[in-house]
Image (cartoon, each protein chain N blue to C red):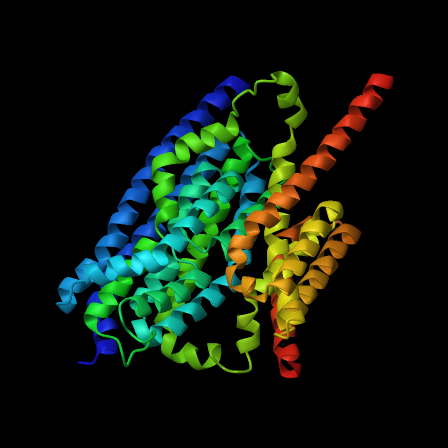
Length: 235
Length: 250
């Protein structure tokens, strides 16, 4: 098959991904927003819309800002199919993003390519299905599992899933990019030391930390490219 | 019938189960479509299979952590609703915060089964749904344009020179963004430690990093590429096991 045919197939796939992704998002939204009302009919207690509006004004706007940031940051990492699926299934920071980045790294896919789009979608779909199955089995076996999962002995392990994940990912990504990693790590550590209350807003701190890392990466990238151009010019 | 019995009734399990099943089907369809498209455009099938294996092993431990979130919320919201929220759209670290804040916003002193009423529950459930739905809403209205813009950036006024200079920067930027994400979390662990909080998260992260170092060393020395699929899950397992022992010292 020639490259033109492959490109045409890929573009057709992307178009249908957007169609299907939109349809799936609309249906999921309708189901999620409809569920409290359906439950309300069953319980004979519909949601209090006044209390809902007050609640939304006090907490909803914070999450709206957070969702805008997440959307802008994560879509370039996930591609189209991966983004639709990741925002439908949730758990982005603690699972979907590291999982998709890890898969991309294992197969060596480059961002913006068809391969990256496919790998990212496969990775997020697989991890979402694993979560759905684990939660289903967990809920099914909730009574026998509860004493085990909530035993005080195991509590430190489950309280530290995210540190364990980010420690492992840090080694993997810092080792090849030490120059880029040191500065944001130092700045973030200092910020969290000087303003301890920021620990409650770590997900927001990803934005400045990411911006610093991208800025540094850009400087090094430009310098490296400049050197390569000079070497080629000398040849 | 008390409120928790009502919230754990078969009807509510059925309502939530239908939505979870729908999302599971969406995942299957996305996966099958991606796999078929990958094959059609000539991608290496081995790479796709490795992705599936690596992602499945990767997801097991965080999923058990998410299950604990379900258990934590089930004491006040019943089991089916947290099960739905954390299977679909929700996030472990948001869901408990939003549920707590929503309970306060609807006039309950806090998230507690003894204070819960049916009306408070349905209002909290609606607030939880609306607060975290925006990513999906943005995807619905702007993902097509946004991803097209990312794949074909507009030429700048300075012309091709700058575009050429930036060629290949996409991968570097993505890696840098991820480094920024990880740095924010590691920085928060350092901050927690220095400000007199627990040292355990930082210690666990260091053990996770050391374990990953070991996996990478084995991979390079033994030329064992298969280990990549299990290195993150293996490192997490080692770090979480270490947390049990280190937790006794904390």
